[in-house]
Image 1 (cartoon, helix red, strand yellow):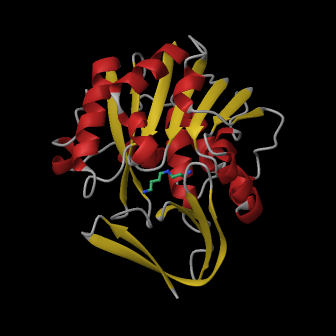
Image 2: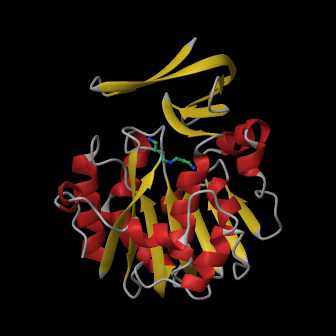
Length: 277
Ligand code: SPD
């Protein structure tokens, strides 16, 4: 038996699976969990790969430690999306963090991941973590000048997720951030989402002074060549705390200080897509 993710009829990914462990239609999306032959359990939302137990560390380490090792003393962090808990797990490795909020619109994603992805969701009940099952847009509207870091760990820009890639959303994020805060957002693959990467980085650069795209090699996302984009008025990811990065990397399977630097180097065709400044 095979799970197939179809990339808009342009290409597809096939994963050999042993069995389907879970299937439900929540109020927002179809949630499925498979036991795969080689990648552990697989979570899909509306048929799209969100994570597998085997490769999730790449994405979650890179979306968190790049900004957290750039900020000197991050205390308050918000994750929009990310119901699997992988980003929260990594954030809590930073002892400076006093409060981590997960704003996930679909509570069912969290509950399903708590059952089938214990290694990813393991910190969701930590006392520093608050779970808010709300729309990210509405939630952000309640905050001003509050967070050191806001991470958008969204699914792909289809359906309701589209709004998280637009300028109005980045403006709300900026208002909720402290003036010296950082936002990061998963920004898709240059092979399959060129237009999204172009428009979202342009929108980010209309709102923030510095916009920096970096690379994370996530094997099971379309093409395996994935990007994350950071934005800030005051910080550049190039100026990170090497000592902190070295310490954190001892707990990581992918992230380290060399990779922190190297992942910011973009091939020319990607430089031409993104509007970094
Ligand atoms: N095409 C996959 C994009 C998914 C990005 N977010 C994944 C959620 C993992 N926490």
